[in-house]
Image (cartoon, rainbow, N blue to C red; front, side, top):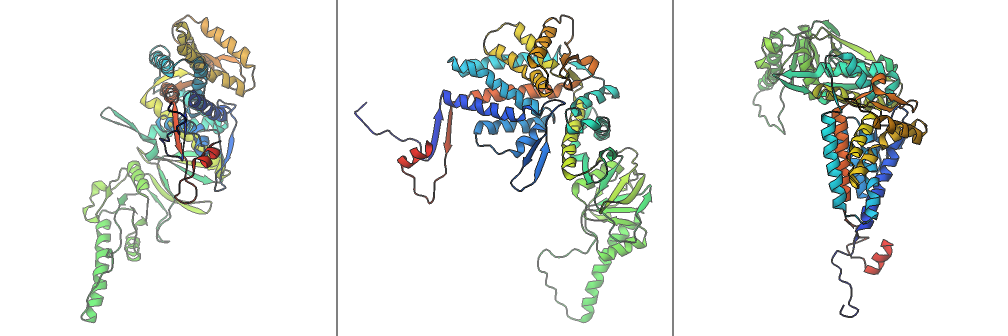
Length: 544
């Protein structure tokens, strides 16, 4: 403008800036790349991925979230895709693969509109409208109510979730474990429903044995042994006391100086220590327990007193384990031994025993009358198998939990996606709104692809089925993930919880909206060497 002036550098020379169309297309490419990694992990014929972390450990899984957690990516848009898999996993526990595949497809659906120079906000408006309609349809006419008391129906839903996983082979066992565990930890207090799987349904993995040996204990299992070898290792109907104070003399925090005048003072000091421990033990013995669990240490002297009274002591429990035992046997955790009363003693457990499994000793507190906490015992050939089984079980547990909290179902196998897609297409709104309808078809298409069926033929037939459906209720025709044929999900009994599907659609569409909103990426590159700034020429070369 004023004749060959030098360009003004506003941003620091070490930052790289990209803006406009280029960024939006790059974001779409990044989202698509992440979706392509995960795509083969959808459905019953899912492939496993094997990932190696920098430490040399390996992870074998087909759980979307577990795969993306292990992958390190550079692109910021890809990072936000990985974030949504984590959100999905924390929120509803299942559907991590579908949400990534769907979000990737939503982004790809927006690409032609961007190339036609349509402004991103117009596309976003269409997407928003479509999402609102999807949510409304799902909550009203596309979902059916489930009776929680009907165990067979609950089992079918959990089975549909487990069927796509590694433990699909042992699905009956996995379903039983998930339903038993959730049933145990469900708490209904004055109409408030609480299902806390994370805290009260602990999964213990012990290598060895076969997967069929896994079970839900009616009680709790802890990886501990008794403190004194002569203590009893099996007690029927034990009276249990839980403490979180130490059964030893309290030592000073830092250095403690004591002035001793005569030698009898020293013996007196030792005597006071012993008397203190004796008093603590006397308080415990007064309530006549058979078992004492404490979160802190137990001194040798205390062990001696407790052994004489025929009490078994187990020390250094984790806080979480202590809480689980309290829920299982009805005891109260007491902080000071002086305050022990009869009502703090837990009598709900039927059996206490210590078993040796493999090389370790395990404490079992089982046969509880009305346990509100449980331990899921997993056995398997190797660590990798156990880890994968645990991940799959977590998904099954979450599905069972979602059903208890929100008992509504939608048909699985891509049927609900097709139904929603048809409803959106019938509105005949042009542009991005219809693009969402087409993007939803990626789920049945991927299912058909993963089991090697003829995708085009299967999808055309499925579309025809849904288009000709006129009756009330949802059209439940979908793809059979095993064979790739079209089947009625009412017959196949494949249903999914509404909570999972709603979360999947919301997360996928909103991520697509978020990534389309971005039109500028400024990334600061690290300074090389010392603190001296690099000259622009070198910077330009570095950028190329």
